[in-house]
Image: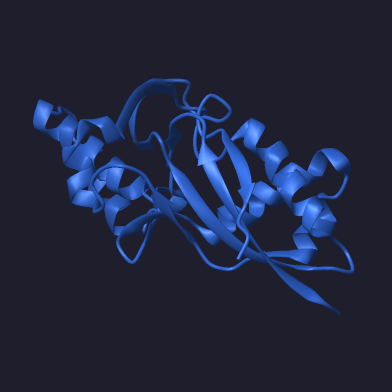
Length: 192
């Protein structure tokens, strides 16, 4: 069984929104803090701002404190790009992302600095599925972003051109939250 490495640069062609699933865990410390504020019967403007800040921090994907694309997202984007060619299951078995990819962009590099810079916040009204009610959500937003991803694949099941093609297809749909309006990207192979 032969394994090859591949490195690709994903280049955003529009803003990307992050939405870490950690806030779905009721035991997560940030989710608990949000619940403590949203559980109040009457909220002040300061409470609304605090919820926005907690949602922002809880939605960031971080690696060693720096914004990143997590390995599971890198893999799932490739698998999703393979599905139109009926290669999704093969790609799921044959491709592996080699860790997270740090996000490259112009601007602050730490979560507290990002929160302070309003260019990195996206607020919008969304409908809650289970109740049908409307609420405002705050997400981290990165414009002018790129990331170099690294992975390995089994050459008996996939070839390099397959992986590049799958990411190109996925780039039309995007990654992150509120796709395909956000998170679309182009792909360049990184030659070592």
